Image 1 (cartoon, rainbow, N blue to C red):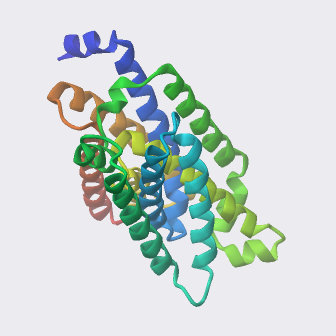
Image 2: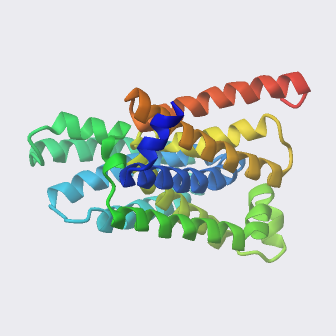
Length: 279
C-alpha cells in the first residue's frame, strides 16, 4: 500500500488534489467553530444551494469562468441571510429555507429549460455531490484555492480576539465598542467564499459537512475556544488527507469519502467525551 501511495504521489494531479483538499478543509474547520457556536451552522447549507443556483445560471450564460459570477452572488446571499436573520418578521431559519430551496429550484429549472449540456442529470449529480474534477485540477485552480484559503486564515488570525468576543457575547461586545455588525458581515462573506471552494471538493449538498463535523467533534472533548479551534483544524486536515487517499485507492467519490470519515471521527470523539465525562 505504501508503494502504491508513493507511486500516486509522484503524479502532479494527486499532489494538487491533496493540497486543495487540505487548504479547503483547514479553512472550513476554522470557520466552522464560529458558525457552530453562533448557531449559524445551517447557513452553510443554504449558501451551498445558492451557489448551485449561481453555477446553473453561469452555465446558461456560458461564462468561461463561472466563479466570477458565483462568488459575488453567494456573498450577496450571505449578507441577505444575515440581514433577514435579524428581521423580526422572518426568522433566520425560515429565510435560509426560502433562499436555499428557491435557489435549487431556479438552478435546476434553468439547466433543463436552456439545456446547458447533453447530460443534465450527470451535471446536477456531480455538482450536488462532488465529482472527479478534484483530480483534474489546473494550476490556476490550485492558485485560486491557495489565495482564497490564505485570505480566510489571515482574516481569522488577524481578528481572532474580536471574533471570539462577538461569537460568545455579541451584546457585551457591542457595548464595549466593537462593530459587531461589521464582524458578522465579515464572517458571512468568508463563509460564502469557503462554501464555493468546498463545492469543488464535496459538492453543494455536502459542503456544510466540512464546516460542521470537525467543530462538533472537537467540542465533544475540548472546552476552550482555542482548544476546539486547533483540534478542529487538525481533524479536518487528517480527514481530508485520508479521505483523498482512500478515494484514490478504493475508487470512491472523494467528497463522500471525506465526509464519512468526518462522521466516524465525530462518533469516536462523542464516545471519548462520554467516557472522560466531558460529553
